[in-house]
Length: 193
Image (cartoon, rainbow, N blue to C red; front, side):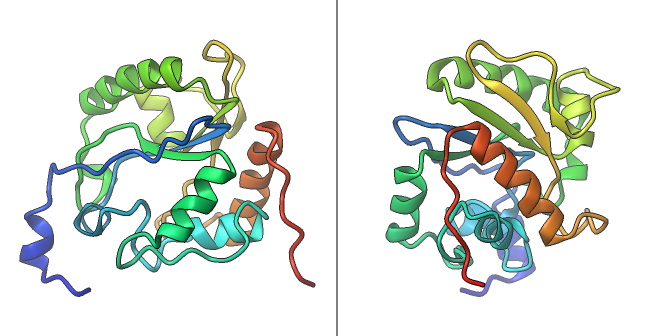
């Protein structure tokens, strides 16, 4: 699927449904969806995003999911069977997360906390420490497990897979994602040598 820049801009502010299996063991939280993601209605749809390659290298999925033209139902089924949910702090799409205001991040954070109370995942993994610091008013937060759980859910901050986070390699992302998956009780697949 190819979209012109004008066609993609028409998706600004639009949303896509959360992927929330029952039960959810690991809830992965992005900052907000990109325009292409909303256009094709599949989380982390841009082919250059390192999210799905990192999930595969972490042993969370058994192959690299390609969501560039929407989700394959078998991929959704695998994520759901594994207890992996995906949502965002802010539901509305933008071209770049940097377009979000601190107020939007804080408002989205409050709504996310309510969703987590309802879903009750074992682990909440937020992608990106900079957005986490602003959204949750934790200016000194670091990557890793956070000191305060949200009810029964452990809270972790892991590196953002965006290409703008170039200092984190796919191997770095995979190591962090594997750690949160294990904390959530998800047995990683063994990768071929």
